[in-house]
Length: 199
Image (cartoon, rainbow, N blue to C red; front, side):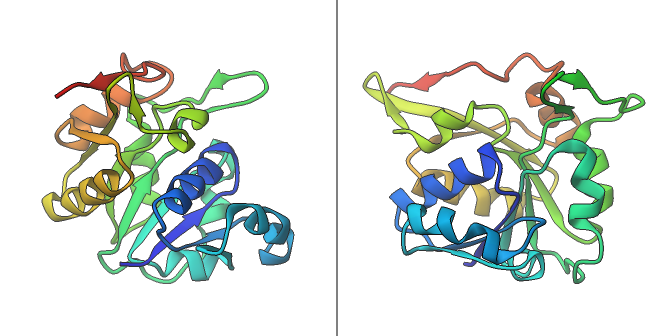
């Protein structure tokens, strides 16, 4: 199972750090090319390599975490997805003003799904602050909860397995129409809550 990361901002880096701690290899890419990521991957460790967008997008599971307005260009011109899994870790909002994007009544995941035709989309890793994604998932004697949702059972099972390997407690919120709305930031009731599963 190969893993790619498109986006080297806070969430992309935090996800890469979580993978590193679990000894899981991945390719990370940004809009400026692999040379611009050499210092970062040097800090992340030997399991993370810098690559092109195309290389990251060719993995079996691809986490996408890009500034909302840059998503169309970040995902344009990539090879056909052919049923591979895309983890949508995006929020429809941008710093520094944190003004919500206009979604016309749709969820942000519906919009992201249109940008990755043929992919099996799973919403995950967007609702926790980045330092919690990269930090110790075991907290207060339990495991930090990481929500996920999607319409493809097999894709969700793969992402749930990855969440488990990273040490989190994965909680399935059902299909995207329900789950993506619950974790969407802003608007959903679940983002930023640091929940722990005991037992």
